[in-house]
Length: 251
Image 1 (spheres, rainbow, N blue to C red):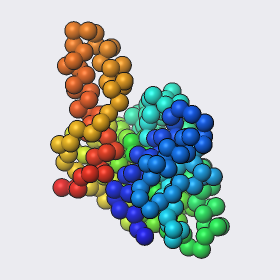
Image 2: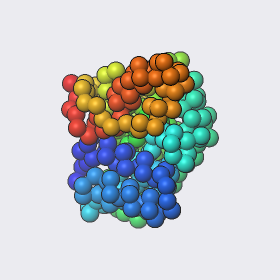
Image 3: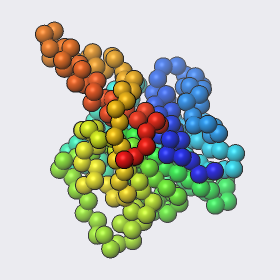
Image 4: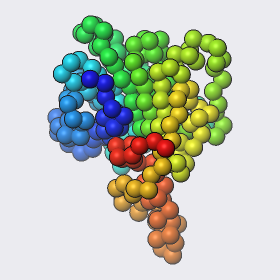
């Protein structure tokens, strides 16, 4: 059963539950509750960085978590986001660990299942680490059926330098689809940064966002401008939200 785009977005959203409060069992339970319909979590492959789901015919979704500044990995996520912004995601330690873990997961799934259909996905930071897994690992790239990114992190100073006649370019182009909402500034440069098919969405929905994030960032501007700045931040966060891809169709 090939996952729908909305299923992949739901898996990406569910992965955020792993950086919340409670022991691993409680976090696994919350992640399972957010999983796309017909998919169950694989606890043995799931941690605070990557969540893995399967259906009843042994198809798999590997979901890389995006930045969660209020979660237990907030400080590490800030560092990774900075390295993405300056165009050096491949040198980031946390992203490198995600690449190695993704490779390990793919190897294990191949060992345990004959010809598994494996789908890779991620939102924001998770899109970048998943893309780096495709870019730098033959094992991942050759065994992933499709890769879908959502509002990926991007950099104004980075650009694709891979020869478009190379096998690497053709493989990435064939298997990768990058979904982006118009007006999302975080993914503004992903066409320059990421090889694949690019799909654009227009969303007027106002997805729920973390009010604590809005309040923290807004307060830096002072009491006099907190409402104005807070509204702008909330609008930007709404465009970046993974919820957009669960409810919208591309234009």
